Image 1 (tube, rainbow, N blue to C red):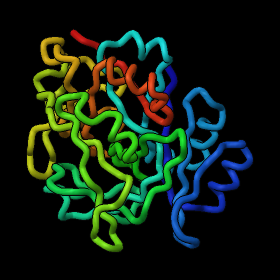
Image 2: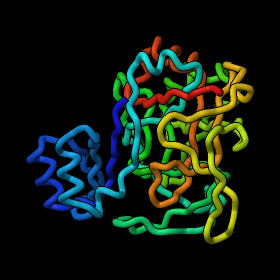
Image 3: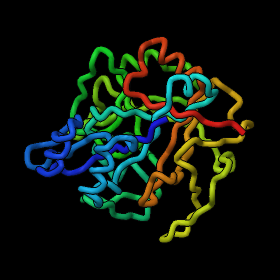
Image 4: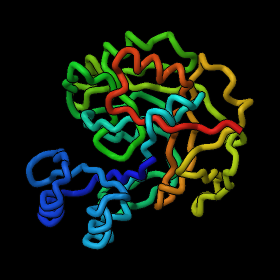
Length: 277
């Protein structure tokens, strides 16, 4: 297991020089003069320790993630799944969500919202060009969303109960975009299913939430009995989310992983074991 830190920061000359000096690959996203830089560092790397020392404020704004071995993943009956890809230029549209309790994150102009629920289709900036070996992508930001191509939809559709494919809107024309769908996990795992989770309250609205470990998630076995279903958690807070932002997590059975593996679809996907208790 390795601990990864995913960064999405405004382009700065000093940051670029640091990444080049330490031979760290990165991706520049956006228009000239207003680009963002996306890159990953690992806690066992010397460059991570130097980045924390050189950019202390930037270093606390990372999205923390764990990387597990293939053996770890294949030995787990249930898995959390997310996507590392950043091909989709996601545009946050308020009308797509019910949301409340805004808060600010350093180096991000737009506010984030502690409570949100998707109520309509998402919007993106432009068409996505899919590579021959690319089936899924995340957005070019910190949101935990999984998008897929038409080919992926055709392979996965109607195989798991609770997995839906939502159309995505093109910002420029307000029409549905071709060859792009959002994976939407309809079934919910209740908060009571989590083991070792702590109850916390939003300091603004006093709404109850749960704080779960950002290591290995523990869930009561009786809530994950049917491998023909996939789930989402609803809003939870993980220890890795240092600003107290909520995140929706997706849970799939081992069969989902193996099916995608058999079809060569797991490139860019992150799977994390779930411990059944």
